[in-house]
Length: 69
Image (tube, rainbow, N blue to C red):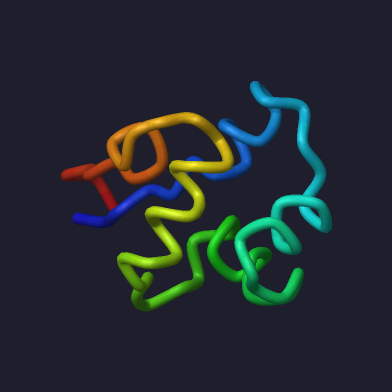
């Protein structure tokens, strides 16, 4: 079981770069990269809210649960 992070998919749909999104939500590009690659162990609700606000989406558009490994 795992959580799949679809930030890169939403970024592509909204045509926004990593650097621009990182600046808008107040995180470093390195931390956004960790989140995008699924290597993050946690995400703050404030960061998730900022992502949803800037990408004009819902948390379920960004995070997905998968039964498969």
